[in-house]
Structures are given as C-alpha cells and as structure tokens.
Image (tube, rainbow, N blue to C red; front, side, top):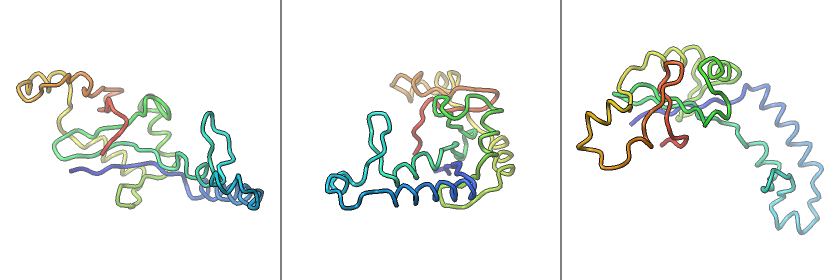
Length: 159
C-alpha cells in the first residue's frame, strides 16, 4: 500500500484554460448532427480528435511518483516528457501544485522534502540478485533507475 502524488496546475492556470474552454464551447455548432454524433470532437490532435472538454482535461494531472512503506520514494519521469533530471523535476513541481491521490493539497517544498527523505529499498540489480529465488521473470525490465540520486521507476504506469 502506498500513496501516489501528482502535479496539477496553479489555480490561475486552470482559470485561463477555463476561459479558453468556454470560448471553444461557445463556437461549437450544436445543431450540426455530425458534431453531436462525434461528441463534439472537433479539435485535431495528431490522429486523435478531441472535444473542448478533452482538451481542457488533457494532461491536467501529471503523476510525480509514489511513496510506499519499506521502499525509497519512486519518481515517475514519464520517459523524459516533462523533465529529465532532478533540477527540471523540481522546477516542474514548483510551477504547479502537488496533490495526493486522496485530493489533499501538499505544500510543494514539504512534498519535495518528504520525497527526498523517504528512505527504503531500491529495486536495483543488487536487490533482484539477493532475492533471485523469488523472481522467475526478467527483472531487468522492472529495475529502478537512479537519476541524480533519485529512485526512478522503469515504468510510467503506477497503481
């Protein structure tokens, strides 16, 4: 059991996105049957088509990582999509707000301090070799990375 943490935008950034959302909704042709049938997915996004609401909520929350008892805090670097090192990560965190999976806001600096000081096991080569009799799978796919001294998950999907 653990707790996941995400970065959400600051209130003023969400308010700005809200204004853009309302403008796009006001421009929708609500009488066009094709628009209704397509759930108003009128915004081109590569091969996808988004509705104004899809666009508004797209990447509104970005998973930062997970705290679990017995394990060192595990960061989610999203394969470098938002940040690729410790400095960029902390800048990204400070540019928004931090919320846990229960909807509680956490002060950014308190979150960073907690995550840096949450100590425990790292699932590295040493860990898997020590526990080899329990792992009959290719553990290298699951091995944690260490970036700038941070435990970073090899996966981007967390539970």
